[in-house]
Image (cartoon, rainbow, N blue to C red; front, side):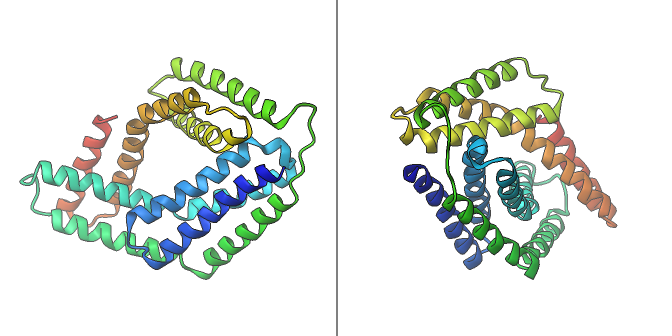
Length: 257
């Protein structure tokens, strides 16, 4: 039990450090991404062990972790979108005379979203989440008919088999299904990676296969989110030239799916 708790405490500590780094420099897109990824890693492991926490306790801490990660979702989307637009602008420099205005607008949107992450409600939610998760880890007590080693190994194998089958039969025109499979592949990859010390195995094949699925679906899901955000931002534009530029960028992203 102590070995499992140590793994969970380590992931929680990573979130604390990532948050501190973000506090120190919220202008760095890499730090926003790192904070969200570290949160997702802990959520993945906790989700994998949800039966060990009990339904009520699991739902509570998962809800808080999910809400915390969502706080930075829009900020991350704007960072990704800015990078995508920058790539297009470098590739097609003569496409528009309004690139400067577009990037200025994206920067202003990002600054507004960045400031929102530091409001009193979000800061209190972060501290409350840390307290809740730490308390849940402290009180973790697993009662099962099999060993923790067999439990994790069998669960990894079952989830891997189901996920590969769903991936092979996936309808790529169904965004929600594609997003769901990619998300679950991430969860399984992180669970295999961080829980493997408890199994005595490296689970390299599982980790490698889940990463392959995640990457294969990544461009599609990212392009979908980018296109939707471009449409949303373009709809706000009063400047017709900027509206046209956002619409063009959106078409490019839709075509890349």
